[in-house]
Image (tube, rainbow, N blue to C red):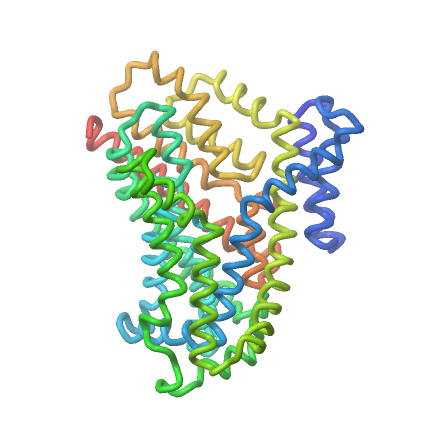
Length: 452
């Protein structure tokens, strides 16, 4: 069976199982991943289940510990009142009308050294606490604000893996990529924020139950007197420590590569260990603030781990589904088709990355795949603009096409309590806005400042 037909059947299967038949998302994704293997001529029957298991396990290995530790951090932030302290400070500084902008800025900055999904794990408790402070209003606005800032810098600004690999593949100076990436990501983030404001008013979805504390517990914490909350910087410490560790690893790899310092920061700065350290600090804050013994600390840890298990299963199921599409050769066929159309290199890179993203789910894989296809074309092209704009076009395309085969889709859907349809209306549509804006700004930049 042709890979594109396999893609269409797999997409239809996911939508029918999840939306029409209301099958559990994890079961639907794993079933569809197996279906892809059965339909693909490149996968022997005896290899189907091992291939699905390998790709499922690969995703768990990359994100499982980080998600579990981030869940503990979030639980501690909520139960200790730290998240409420942070949101009160944001609201006091910016005012209620602009409190969501602080989440955009936080996501924008933190996703430069840290994976955008990790940033979402860290900041979503603050968004939930902020919505509770506002009487359950503006929930969609707050959770989308994090993604508006974080998703933009994740695809445009090194040292996140996608743009870093693209810079190497396309032989573009990393410093230029950082400078131009920041300039493209900023208006994209702001346009995403404006979309978040609009869709929040249109859907008017109140805060939902989600893994972690119940809404009743959140309401009780949100009404605590100021003197019962931890200090602001104490409240921030479980978030800042992982960010410092991960950012330190980035700096060391940039300036002190292959040294003892780099090896130490590689250990400290791995997302799993960094979030483990954040979880330890979060437990300390919770124990100190609520005067809990070590024995009583086991209760919030168990609750957080239960919530994390659901997220890990669904996220890894989406990763297995996308991985089986790659194994079936969908990405290769889409890349070949796009290369044969003879488009401008910026438009070709944009569409190629978008097609690969839709096919297999990972924006990073889409950027790496599209840049590898574009590299030989750049080598022989007589460009009237700097090649960094081709890189930005690929990053813009890699934002578009988030749906059920993207692990980030399931992280957002599960941690916010939204339905699959609502996630398509919010997260998926937001990334279309970000990608479209990013590509428009890239085209404008190549016209105004062609050679930087």
